[in-house]
Image (cartoon, rainbow, N blue to C red; front, top):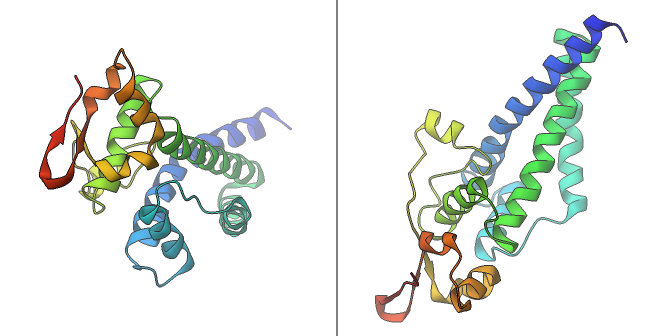
Length: 197
């Protein structure tokens, strides 16, 4: 590998990471929500909305990723050279992997840093209040550009959904409330609201 090849690969990697953020938005909104269950991606996504602890099986995710990553490799490789194609494919794969980890962590583990606190508010508001907004999970960039961003200060979680967010239930029961708890209201039957400060 020459230094020019390395530069092409690094530029492809950076482009792939940025490109992934658009792909994340496209998969979530354009393929997950807009088809309303008429395609497999949408059916899987709507199943996740119905049960937020349901995640598409790994084998099905790989089956979907192979043609996408192949298209990135071939498309970028043909347009910008083989090393740029390899870099872009690695960038998209790395972004996709990060997204999968972050998305599952939001539902299973809850916030652990300032950024994950933002990501949890942003994404869980999408689940509980406004499924037409906040489609980016790792970044609000495309929501801002496409007009689907809604700022979130506090997420209203139905009391019945607490069993699907065990980390929030534990935080509510803790003797010392973690700072992220101020980001959530638990809405009980009859419209009453329990808030732990």
